[in-house]
Amino acid sequence: MTDTLLVRGGDVLDPVAGEYLAGHDVLVRDGRVVGLGAGLAAPEGARVLDATGLRVLPGLVDCHVHVTAATADLAALPTWAPSYVTAHAGRLMRDMLHRGFTTVRDTGGADFGLAQAQAEGLVTGPRLAFGGKALSQTGGHGDVRGPGADAQEEPGCCASMGRVVDGVEPLRVAARDELRRGAHHLKVMAGGGVSSPTDRIDSTQYSLDELRAVVAEAQAANRYVAAHAYTARAIDRALEAGVRTIEHGNLLDAHSVELFLAHDAFLVPTLVTYWALKEEGREFGLPQDSWEKVDAVLDAGIGALQLAAAAGVKIAYGSDLLGGMQRHQSQEFRIRADVLPSLDVLRSATTVAAELLGMVGQVGVLTPGAHADLVLVDGDPLQDAGILADPGKHVPVVVQAGRVVLDRR
Image (cartoon, one colour):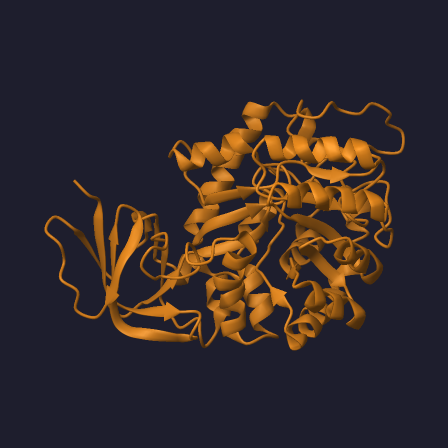
């Protein structure tokens, strides 16, 4: 017997065309969309979900999360028992799903086990594309040791978000190891960061030969590389080395934009995390010296977003929140909608995200053959995508793979 659902009478968003299909039905069987149209007949035994008066969006996609980051004190995370981190990850993933994010890309921390647990229904949460542990040079953004520490963890031993690796050949081995563990992409730290204790925001990290080695290993496995980078100098080096997605990019410049277009690369801004870190970071474990770095990237992010958008750079949705600040995940919609057209913001979390993940036609749309991920919205996000920043008020129903996972009505 098949598992059939008919979502009846909603205005279904076509993010490609940028318009609603008014009063349409979505027919779902075995977790996939099998029909779309007005006045579809309900198959015998199908569950009918009334969407009259609501907008129906494809499931949302967040392309930069850390589902294991249950604290903003990333140096403490490796001291937690992996089982304890997993329990926290389950809670964080469930909350993401209830905000309407049915697919996410983890850019440091998640692994095959969490992805498999979600796929088998052992964990309730978004479909998980993961990159394993991010690769960092000694003293780079993924090195959580303070200046007085010497010991370094063994790869794979702990629930950390990164692994420290130096040199072309060791990086090749580490990249192959993350790919062996099932990584959908590789992540490198190509410049300084906020949460790392010993580097500068304006530093570049890894030599070009090292970056190219990681890119070569990813390409050999038909995968790609994402790079953490803030400054134009770090961004440009990463793009020239063949990196496909730049995470954050707050301090990019006009030449960076040219390189994005020339290399057909993606930008994944994460503006909400800087607002949250500034407001709440210390409360949730961010060390004082890291908190003091936030201002350097906070103010520039909006300008970078506008510059990239105006030039036609492909921009995907990202949040990058840590610890208790993850509850602000949807606020990225409000921040972007204040400066960009709402359709562009919606596409960043649907069709652009699907292209980044290599899942065109699978997620981000509601067409036959796609995963039956639907978000029912009370309000009009095409007029104001910022309403999605308040899912408790505006997102009454979430469907993932044809199963109603949340119904607040």
